Image 1 (cartoon, helix red, strand yellow):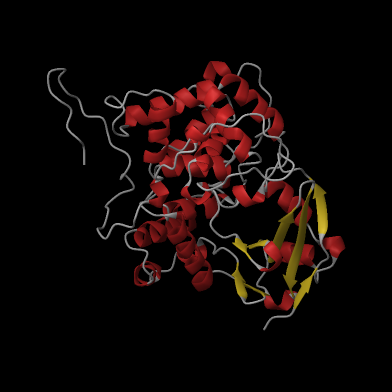
Image 2: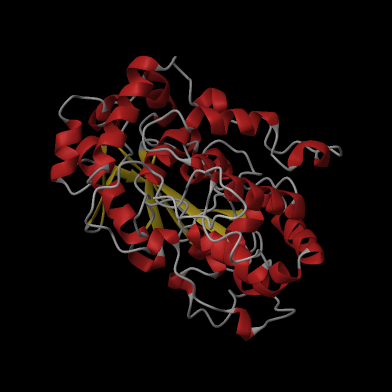
Length: 399
């Protein structure tokens, strides 16, 4: 077993209304965090195991490092790691970025509650939902795995990718941790067949082809070039171009659609949670139901997620909530997840100003559908092209 060094617990002053890890780490953004001993959340990130726990006023964190000789790290990472000394440990900076701690979430919640009565009803029991700033490559592969899948199985698939192709980091108790595999590790010719043997189904081809595309076809740094380099910019004139999103967001979304297994929803997930485009609003059948139920979208007109309907719903939410529409969307998304359906009280330290039990409906999410036994040819199960039609002809469902 590899030699491990664990740094002491350190803390960041952050209240539950600014970050609730029990919600944020379980609401379908990241699929590798696991609850380990002593009610801690742990995940392998950038060559170390990061562990988190929280009370009403502090986020506590520690890093567990293997000895450098057990890791195949780049020289820059190895020098940063040193041999696990606190002085060279960049875990604080890593977490501040990964957990996206710069935006003032309380102010955003207050703003969304003022302009959206439905958000105001749901927000008190779901305070502290932040959008993570994950590695874009991990977000891309994780959400390719999400097609016609549920959160438990997505997590299992991502776990298999790490075990079979990622760097071993170490153990915490009986839990074994591996880092997320690189594109190069998933680009070998035998990867697709192996992933099919592991139960990935048609997603095996998407993952292998996407890894090869980034490794051999795309310019180095291509995916990172799609990132929002200034995610916290304040622009008083943003409404003039926000309905369809900023130019950089639209370009990133368009580029991602060129990859195997990436449809509009997966592209928006990657834009929001991996590339820093806060106006991205991923829309699946679950969000479609929210739009119909809570925002009065006509059930007959918006029966299916055609291209026009997808864009119309996204533009509606961007116009309603503003530049951080994806953040607001994720709060309502979490509020309807089955895993939180029995939540009857808010985390400590959060003042409840208004509740409405009639609103706590459980609606089946796209990521909670039972796995289909049939092969699906493209990531289009919840997305359909508009077809030209006569006004006198009833629209047929596009398969």
